[in-house]
Amino acid sequence: MLRCAARLTRPCYRPLCARQAVRTSSQFATKSSQHHRIARRLAEYTGTLNDPDEVMIKHSEARRKYWLDDEDLAKLEVAERKDAFTNRDPQHMYWLPDVVELALRKRSKEDLTQSYESYLRERVEQDAASAIFGVDVAVRRWYMSASTDTVAGRRSVQQGLISNSIICTMKFGVWTVTQSSAILADFFHSLADVCNYGYRLLELKRSSKVGDSSHPYGYAPLRYITADRSFMILGACGGVIPIVLGLKSIVAMEALAPLEGSFQVNVGLPITMLATSALLEAFAAKTAWEEIKDLAERERMKPLEYLHQGRDVLSVATYLESMSGVMGAGIGSAGILASYMYGNACGDVMASTVMGGVVAYCSAWLLKRTTASLLGRPLPLAEVRNIILKVEDLETVIALSDVKTEMIGTDAVRFKAEVRFNAEAITKKCWGSDLIHYSKGASLVADDLHRDWIMRNNAIFLENLTKELKVLEAIIAADLKQNFVHVHIDLEPW
Image (cartoon, rainbow, N blue to C red):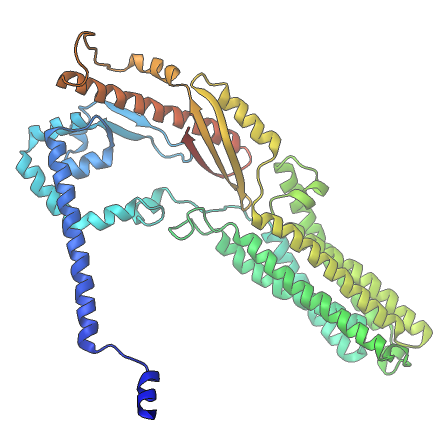
């Protein structure tokens, strides 16, 4: 029984030959799938050469699949499709029947099919991947841009790091001499600030990375994630620890003990250090306030309004943390003077507890602020309403519905909406196209000519619908780019 139990509990390892068989089977399945995919693509390609659909294809596709050069394509009718989101040149679109006809003049069907089969064997997987944003390296060179170009908050964070590094060193030296509770509380606050500012500077650089296949909309939300984590550190180190130590001293009646050592003799040392700390913190707060004023002006807000609703939280965090440092220096100085005057540590301990409470409150308020940003904040209602009215003024649009907006980071925004188009208005815009006319007495189903008429004219209608979508995107993008650098628009016909 014991041997049987041992066999049951012993890990079961698959034999080497079985693992090789599984791996070989998996590789065979992959190759078989690729073979079927290539065969299906070749069948579609052959059908296109015999009877091309009435669709438009891109310039790159015409070159890649039909081996036409720019000189050949210059002979064909071209339509330009402008991208509303980038400043690159418009894409050139060509009717597929025209492309196929030109390709067959240059090469035979057999030659085209063989060339396309060779191409498929090399590129079938890459072609599928290239449709995914961020995967095609060639696309990345000209299309992908930084998720956020802004340096908002960097200058104030750098100044905060410099100021608090100096302050932290001074406070630790003074605390080792005086053993003041207020100085210790302020030291923990400055220590948390040094760690947070260093962490924020590192993540600010990451937040400006370009979008990729893992994060198509970029890394701008890292600003909020970084801020959220740093506020937790601030609350724990700069708030909770001083409060716990202060309450412990009060409960143990240590606060009523008479003063001893250099604190009793030289009260000027901690007061001077706290005054210096207040000056350095005030300078960091001034730098952050100047950034806040600039950012508020861009968003057409008042600075105080920006503290509550502005897009960038790092400048706001630096300002409030610095101001809490100035306030803490004042409270600490009052507590130290009270302890010196009454000859016991009560004022010093009470001051350290209050200072910890100030930092904890600041941390909690900032955490609430970043939570709203992490959940996603929409555009102001008035701005969205203005965009809707502009779009619905167009003759080709009946109405917008299910409009959703979200601000991403500090300078990117998403706009999603369902569009109810006016089919008759779009059809009227087709009159200038090369429409094919038919006789009213003929059957539209049985006659090949009229089948081609339906295909061609439906393709023209679809192309005009696409153009209208691009017009809407351009209108919305022009409005949003007044406040945002990067704009992502998703419009769905309804």
